[in-house]
Structures are given as C-alpha cells and as structure tokens.
Image (cartoon, rainbow, N blue to C red):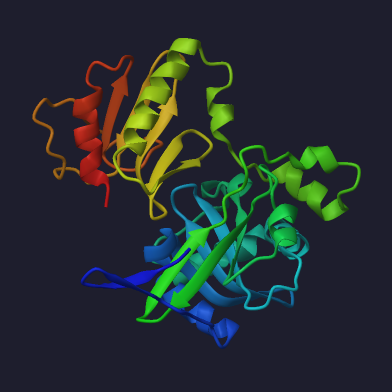
Amino acid sequence: MQLFTRTKNQLISLKEKAFKLEKDIQKLFEVNIEEITGFKMIKSEFVIKAQRIDTLAYDTDSQSFVIIEYKRERNYSVVDQGVSYLNLMLEYKADFIVEYNETQQDNLKRVDVDWSQSKVIFVSPSFTDFQKQASNFKDLPIELWQIKQYEGDIIVVNPVKKSKSAPTVKTIQNTVNSELEKVAKQVKVYTEDEHLNGKSDDTNELYQAFKQSIFNLDSSVDIKPKKMEIGFTKNGKIFTDICILRSSLKMWINLKRGTLDDPKGLARDVSSIGHWGNGDYEIIVSDTKNLEYIMSLIKQAVQ
C-alpha cells in the first residue's frame, strides 16, 4: 500500500517508519484496542502457568476471549505459538474467567463464554509468505494483523485475509501435532458457507441481494461469520447482523433504542428481550420489496 500527502495536485509519498520495539506496538494497540478491534481490554501481560500473554481481550460480539501477541521480527512460528496459547486457554478456562471478573465491572460465568470461538491474533509490521501460508486454514482460529506507521503520525492496521480457497485443518490431519488436534475439536471457525448450507435457492438469493446492497453502502465493509449469524463490519465493528432462516432473513441494526429514524416503523424494538445480533432493532424479511428502505436504516449504523 502506498500512502501520499497532497499539496494542491502534487502527491508526495509518505515513508514508513519502523517501530523500535515490540513494546511500542503493544502500547499503541492496547490504548486503542476498542477503536481498532471493538474488543474489550482485559489484561496486559497476563501471566498464566509461567507463560506470559501480551494482551488478553474479550470479543463481546462472539462472547469469547482473544489472545493478542505482538512481533517486530518475522522469524517465528505463528501456528505453533498460537495453538499453544489456545490449548492453554481451553485447559485453564477458570483462570481467564477470574481475570475478567477482577478487571471488569460485570461478572462472567464459564457458561457465558463461547469457548468454541476463542482465537489468537498476531500483530506485526510484516509477515513472511510462509507465515501467511501456514495460517491459511479456514478453520484455524489464528489471525495475522499487519500494523505500519508512516510519517505524519499515520497508522495503518490491516488484517491479513485468508484466501477464499483456504483448506481445512482436516486435510493435514495425519501430520498435525496433538495440540492442534485438541484445538480443532474444541474451537470452531464459522464460515458464510456453513450458514447457507441446506438453505433453498430462494433464501440464498435473498441473502445475496441484501449482502450486496450492504457492501454497496461502504467500500470497507467486511463480514464476520459467527455461530448464529453473520456480522457485517466496518473498521472491525459490526453495524448489522443477518441470521439466515429457512425461508427468510432476520436482521439486526446496531443502534440503541430511540436512535433509529424509521418513519415506516419497519424495525422492531428488541431492547428488552433476548436476541442474537447486535443492537436494539430487528427486521425480518422474506423478499426484497423494502430493500432500499432497509438499506437507509442500516446506513444509519455505519460509522
């Protein structure tokens, strides 16, 4: 990615500035963790069983813990370290719950956590092709995030996307180590295809129509498949969710009660009842008749 500053019609390239220490990356990321990821900061330098985790965070969207590690150099194995941390978390769940409850205002029970959506994120200025390929499994809960700083205090953070044709860990089942096998049994990375599996062609087309319209709202929109629904994000933050039902879609708009401008009264207030998606407004659709109007509602949540 090339970045420029503009002076009238002349573009001047911004030069990248290297981070001096891994700690510099960690401090910057932790101070701004909610803005960057939407995660809740739990603990910096979390020590458990003689192992030190750089950052422990909590993803309220998926109700799961996230371990974040920072690297300035590129000569390390993301898979081995990531799998080791995931096994540590799954083996000592109570310790993670205790740390959450000691640092947060609300209390968390073990049953409140979806341990199947636990994951590890590595943050570094760059990754080797080998590191990208080694983590390129669609059901491996290890993510790579690239962070760079440039002249003029410009910071760029980009998750490294896995390829659409990324294989499953099961394809290397005979060669994986025992730690990876244990993780594969307990942790689940959800995909868009799994939500569409078994649905009718009509439902599939309905979802694709709304999905494309949501993507048209902003060029930086991405998706985040979860257990029960698919989240649509901008800058890592979910602004709407879609649950694909048998013959319809259930959608949520991530706005607080009383903040949605909905002249037609199409959205239902679900602030006082339990629901899967983010936000206080729910819409169920079985056709595209109100598609443009619904997009005008969803657009209000895009920030």
